Length: 258
Image 1 (cartoon, rainbow, N blue to C red):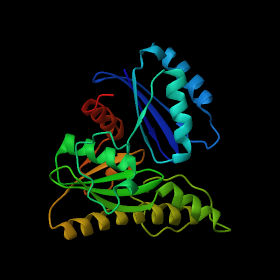
Image 2 (tube, rainbow, N blue to C red):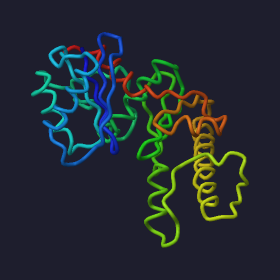
Image 3 (cartoon, rainbow, N blue to C red):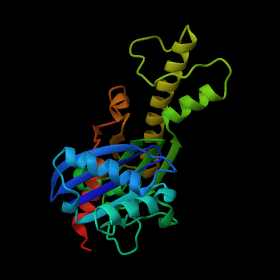
């Protein structure tokens, strides 16, 4: 069985696959001081609850954008699952696609994995929007090559910054204001409208600029926790795919043997 790990700035997601069969998924907050033992006890107990034994894991593949967590995740795999993990970005790992950026080592592993999975599922050319701690827009050409993209602050990060940097603006959840007027007549309504419709403008504006720059009509795929919220408010997003990163890790694993 494969243990696939997606370590992001906010959460670490663990999933287990038996061949192509999805067996379970669990999520933990990304904390700087969490040790391999803390991950190990927590994860093995959750797996056991779902009828999965730690000894059944034979391989582990990790996509991490938090280098400070790599040692703990590697220790988790070696101590609790008796296997040495591979990391997306390891030179010996075959991705099956080119990375056409100035410095391929700078490309976020989650972005590369998403590009690979999206091309495999939807073909290309594509724009992949990932609504995470940052909101990323990544371009995949018709051959499946990763061509770079744009990085903007994530919407939750923006909402928190707005609250923290001002004296009178409250901390609010992100939500679709629906049919409410764009011009808010209360502070809460104004913030809700400004942040949500501002992000819709960001999405639509960047997609239009990328398409114009590329000179082609790229399909738009959205992933990440808030993808459905924005997809329902703009026709620019053609597909939402919450399982993109994990499916990409599974597909990359299948291309490699170690």
